[in-house]
Length: 389
Image 1 (spheres, rainbow, N blue to C red):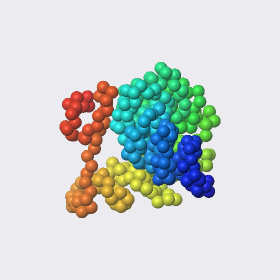
Image 2 (image 1 turned 45 degrees about the horizontal axis):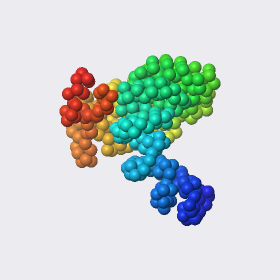
Image 3 (image 1 turned 180 degrees about the vertical axis):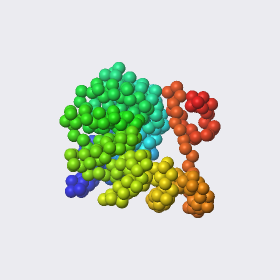
Image 4 (image 1 turned 45 degrees about the vertical axis):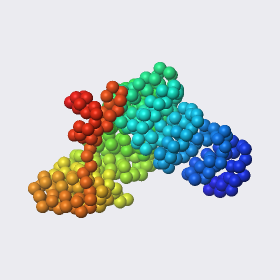
């Protein structure tokens, strides 16, 4: 903060001087400290012919960091010229805000302007493909990376892994992973997480053991993935073992996510009392993810008494989440407690909570389409339902 204060004091002289270097550095400094108003003042005082691509791009990144994507778009559209860094800054802003369709639209504009796809743009667009499950588009980008021999660093490799994992292409993931000469912790974690996500717990554990043989240090994310693998594969003994192992061997204290995985593991196995005991012994207050795992397990295994207790706690934490009320009402319905079902629905009405319709995303001939479950309003709904069927 001392450096920031010094920089702020120097702003009047620097921003009025003719040095592009000074002004760009000031903008960069203000953006790093999230002082967007100050950054914008320096930018606005710069004569138009003194504003370089880096000036505009830094401001775009600053707005994106604060989630002000529309402000970033405004700056982007005013740019007299752009380079690949500018395009990536704007596409990354859309991706970070989960505005994947707009990221695709901008990507198509970029290609029309013959901008060369580099590893940074590729990573951003692969993340967009992952967010929408757009495998065809993602595979095109992956092939482009291979054909143009773009450097496959750890970050880019991880985005490829993530896309293939989410799109259920683990074989391709493993091929890419084995071909990496330098595997960072994020690459290992992503590979373990991919197997975990698709219920291949033993394969995830095998990758973890290989990682340890390579001498790569584990982190808390590694054990979230390992415990998640045990949960999705019903590996109860292994789950208990790695929950202790992370602390006793690696000195990693369990975080909320680790407890959530263990509660999910025990809940899926029907060990509801043990899961409840674990929650009661947590050194921190359980969040809605931990309690929600037990709540769902109570419905599956028909434990109405515990489910009612946990369900009420979950609703207290997420009073606007309609899914929580619906699950509790369904639990009451399973037990034939219709008066309680009516009470839950009444509570929803009194609180103004409405059921949120689900939506799906599907890729048709390289184009990504989004539609509400059961809806027929999409202009290509006929083709979408034909493919879905």
